[in-house]
Structures are given as structure tokens and as C-alpha cells.
Amino acid sequence: MTKPTAPLGEFERIARFFAPLAGPGALKLTDDVALIDGPAGEQYALTTDTIIEGVDYFPDDPPFQVAQKLLRVNLSDIAAKGATPFGYLLTTALPKTHGEAWLDEFTKGLAADQKEFGVMLLGGDSSSTPGPATLTLALIGKVAKGSAVLRSTARAGDEIYVSGTLGDAALGLAARKGTLGAALGAAERDYLIDRYRLPRPRVALGQALAGLAHAMIDISDGLLADLGHICSASGLRGVVRQPSLPLSPAARAAIAANPILNTAVTGGGDDYELLLTAPAEAADAIAKAAAAVGVPMTAIGAMEKGEGVALIDAAGRPVKVELKGYAHF
Image (cartoon, rainbow, N blue to C red; front, top):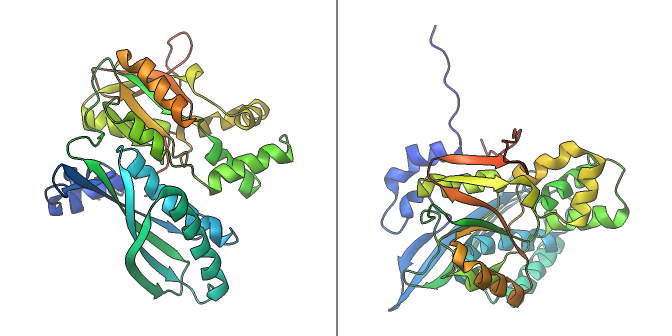
């Protein structure tokens, strides 16, 4: 009897079925954006993401924040290239339960973030569905030609940096599901849930880091999984120091009460922080850039020759990883 083969993962599917269709500028479908030439000295960075009711957000989440999340997960991809947001296309497939009142709040959320991030609606499509709401946004950004920060250009000897704090969104999801436990106070739970519902795309920081970072990605699937994408694209190994990982007070409290939740820090996903590699001599400039936009940056490891990703403790010993990141398939 022939042994059944394991189903293909997300990136195996892309490589097998879609990469052969990719044209110039698609970066072989190995990055978060495509780059196409625009006016003289400029390129357009294009990205798209879909969020689905019941998968990426809860059915009773406020439509205002659902809209913001949809736009912001795309803005995060643009931020990781060091690009400036320009405009977006929106496609909605909505069930009949999402009537005018839902759309009114949804579009108010888009309007608020259009104003905050300087981006505009350019077009799209709308449809109905008997299933859950499915929302797709395609974002266009602008970047000086040749200056987009890719996944594939890390170098051995680079320091690894991350913005903000890690694990908040995954812990917020657990809090939203009611599986976090009762150890946290209401303010801490609300903080974590807000971090899950409302990503903070580091657009200004990404622009400030262009020219300093060798490689950059945003953390959507989890720290180790997304660092693995940089390692794979750059042909290098990443080593992360577990004690260096930055945590919010709420995350520290949650993990102190239940240490198994530590997996959220390295593999939980939905952080939408910037993860980058840069030469050691750029440390002061990176610190100044981060301070200028009010977002902390933390050095958490280094790139070296080899392949894969390793997590080590304070003594340099390997740490067993139960969850490296979110898997779509």
C-alpha cells in the first residue's frame, strides 16, 4: 500500500504551484511584496492580505477595529520594506447579516486609519457570501528604487533586532478565548486583547531603518518562523538569545503565572513588529532612529553561516521549541 503523503505547507504550495507563474518584480514569491518600477527613481511595493471572520477575528469584534486590522496588517508589510504607503484596493465578501450599520462602522475604521497613515482607497470589488465574511486588501507603497529592504540580503555577522514587545497578540487571543487563566487583572487582559485586535504597523520606523538594515520582515507568523524566512532567503542561520526577548509587563505577568505561555513569545504570531538584521556598527544609528519615532528596538541575536534558526538560553545552550510559528495549512 502506498503511504499517503503529508499535505503541502503554505510555502511549499507557493513554490510548487504559484512561483512558476510569477513575473519580474515578484521576487520569486519569496518576500512579502512585489516591486515594480514607477516614475524615475521610484518603485511601487505591492502586498495583499486576507482576513476571515472566525479565523483572523471574532464575529463580535467591533467592525471599526476589524477594518483597522485589515488595513494595518498590510501596512506592516509595507513598513518592513521601508516604503511609504500610497493607496489600496479593497474586496469584501459579506454575509447578509453584515448590513448598513456594520458597513458604516467598518468604513469609519478605514477612514480613521486613512487619515493616520496617509493612505487612500483606489478601488476594489464587493460580493456576498453564505459563509463567513472574507475581507481582502491589496496595498501599494512607494520606495526609492533599489532601497527596499528585502528578506534575502542578511549577512553573516549581522545583529538581529526586533521592535516593540513580543507575544502580546498571541496572549491577547488566549485572553479573548478565555484560556489565559484568571491570574491577570482586568487592565492587563484588556491591554493584551487590544494588542491582538489592533496591530501597530511600524511605518515610520521602517522608513527610518531603510539604509541601516540589511534585511527586514514583519512578524506575522511568529518570531522564529519569520526569522526562518530571512534565514532561508539569505542562506544563513539565525541564533536568538531567549533572555534578550522584549516583553510587556502584561506578558511577563501572564507567563509568570503560567510558564507554558512562553511559547507565545517565540511562536505566537500576530505581533506585527519589525524583525531585522543589521551590522554591529549600525547599533547607535538604529537606537537613534527608534528613539526618534518612539518605538523601542532590542538586539536579540545574530546571523551566522549555516541554516535554520536556533533559540539559546543565557548559557548558550539550545532551548527546545514547541511552537515555531503559525501554520496556515
